[in-house]
Image (cartoon, rainbow, N blue to C red):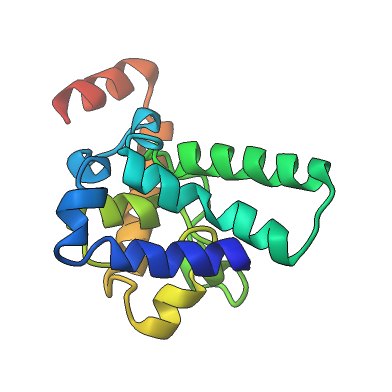
Length: 165
C-alpha cells in the first residue's frame, strides 16, 4: 500500500511541467514499451523510484527477506507491465475484486497516451482520482479478444497475422 501510494503521487508529479522533461521523458520514449523499457530512466527518476524503500524501512522495520521479496516482486511486475502481453481474462477490469488489480494493458495505455493510468499494482488511486482512461475497460476487452483470435489461428496464419501488423 505504501509503495502504491508513493508511486502514484510521485508518478503524477513527474508527468507535470517542468518535471516531465527533466525526470520522466527518458522512460516515455517507449510509447509501445518492451521489458527493456521497464528500467529505462535517468538518475533523478531512479532516485525517486527507489527512495520510498529506505524511507518506509525507517518508519516500519522489516526483516531483510521481506525487503528482498518485495524488491524481487516489484522488478518482475515492472518487467511484465512493460511487456505489452496481457495474461488476464475477459471481464477482469469489471470484476468486483479484479477491477482493482492493474494489467499490462493498463500500463501500455499509459505509455501511449501519457496523461492517465498512473497507478502501479492496484487501480485504487486512478479510480478515486479520475485518472483511469475512460476507455480502459473497452480497450482491455479488445486486447483480450485479439489475443484469443490469434490463439485459434493455425500456426501459418498466426505468422501471417504477426507480419501484417
